[in-house]
Image 1: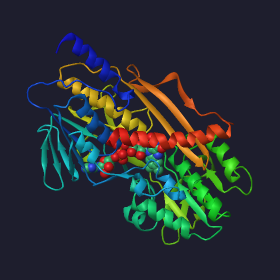
Image 2: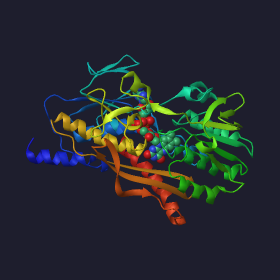
Image 3: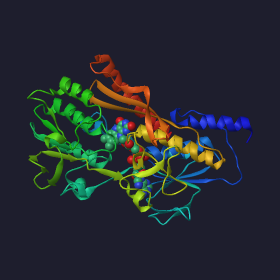
Image 4: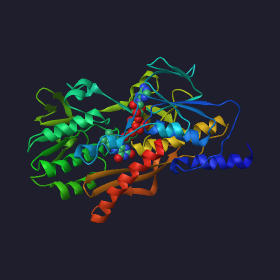
Length: 432
Ligand SMILES: Cc1cc2nc3c(=O)[nH]c(=O)nc-3n(C[C@H](O)[C@H](O)[C@H](O)COP(=O)(O)OP(=O)(O)OC[C@H]3O[C@@H](n4cnc5c(N)ncnc54)[C@H](O)[C@@H]3O)c2cc1C
């Protein structure tokens, strides 16, 4: 590679995390094609697969995903209010195939870091030079007595993966009598989508306001605070009477005994340290950890997978890169935008390694929008860079922030449009 090409590559790769989908990368041919196997076709995996091909079309990329289509969790709360269908958040993998990604629908059951192979439940085996793992979260079923995967499927959905459980929860809310009570059990930190449970309460309230105005929605929460709390309080006060005796939404935090310890599915009764609550509809979002394959492949240390935060290479096994919700990437939140941003950094680092180059200095970006009501959107945004001394991905001071309190109706309405256009953009960036 000439010096000019080398310089250009480093510049482009270093800024890949914050650029859009239209970057043109030179093809940097080097003898035999390198093979990357990507495990999980969610935000992190799909983005990494696409950007590896964009960075160097000589890299052979195979993406292995358990499900034939991707249903995004982001925007799935809108299914609960009836504002959108599950179909509108379900996408196929043809776009990735057009980028030359070989898409295999199968479940990965093992990764051998010595032989550098990936095994699937369907009996297939794939050799890799680098493996990207972005399996999302798993649940700590043991944390709430009486709750398990079967109960979640049959009667008390978590709906923290969008799909059949989202539809079940929607049907339960529709079937609930007027004046009925919905309980949402929020998880402890860290978990996927920090503002998500509160947006969920808002979306359910949005439906109830029109169809069951006497309904109550109570969030039982082990935490003492939550993401964008001030903005949520403001929206709930304006839209759902928060702070008054007739408020449709209540939040019971850790200091008021909000930690749920058990559930009796036969009576829809929740047990906290001090009290019992009986609901008409219950949504339990269990405490979380990395997805199962992270444990099968020995990538996790405790609940999450430690990584080199410059490249997202696993700290436990060389040539395996762990992205998104499953990775330990503090202080980035576990969000789609974060996974998308991390995937570009990892794709650039893998490509750099294949070319014998050092990875660039990464920057990351995240914005989390939440739709509190019909014309009421709020957001939090941050740009992040690597603080090598602290071994943390730290927010860049002065970049980003929360949307303002007491904003005009125009701003709130615009944030809803921004949320919807962000959704289209991120789906395009990962899958088209
Ligand atoms: C209700 C809700 C609302 C949200 N809203 C937002 C939002 O507004 N903005 C935002 O930025 N984020 C939001 N999120 C968070 C976002 O969905 C996740 O952070 C993001 O999807 C993480 O990407 P990922 O690649 O880590 O995992 P995922 O996108 O969950 O993808 C993991 C994929 O891996 C596959 N997989 C797992 N194990 C295997 C295996 N062994 N073999 C093959 N395939 C496997 C799964 O089938 C899945 O497709 C929301 C989440 C929820 C629940």
